[in-house]
Image (cartoon, rainbow, N blue to C red; front, top):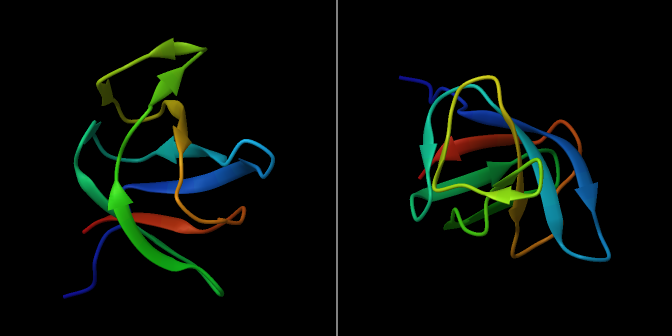
Amino acid sequence: MAEKPIGEITHYFSKIGVAVVKIADRLKEGEQIAFRGATTDFTQAASSMEVDHQHVTEAKRGQEVGMKVDQRVREGDKVYRA
């Protein structure tokens, strides 16, 4: 059974290590998530999530969430539940 992505990277701010994730399924702060793409493959806990510069503990479908990431990600990388 193939995993279903819960989001996709739409932008990455390299200087501050923040990714913008377009959410396709609900995501709660602290959940383990995996980032996968052509050159990306790592897992981390969802942390420091913000919507419109406001801290949130849960992201809902359709929202674009800014999130601190441990490693570089690229536009188009997929986000999965780990």
